Length: 102
Image (cartoon, rainbow, N blue to C red; front, top):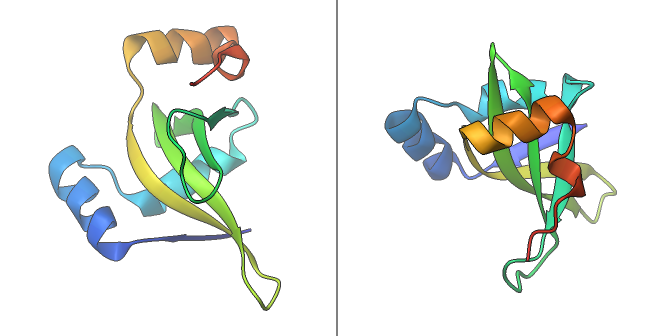
């Protein structure tokens, strides 16, 4: 699986939140990772919220999936932050993906 992001957004997140999108790739290796479709707004493409463990913390990442003309499937990260207390509890109870985001 390939990953991409807007480099300016990555640097802003690194500067403001001390979180690097590069490290968030590890979420996809977490067997406990959960996700839900983000229906809050009418985006131009499907967006997903995922929560998982990376680098000794639990993080919340928003991303989309893209398929390019050459057939390459890519996860494009949009934002990343540390999960809040409620989200961490949902992660531990495995209930994050059961919620509806609208």
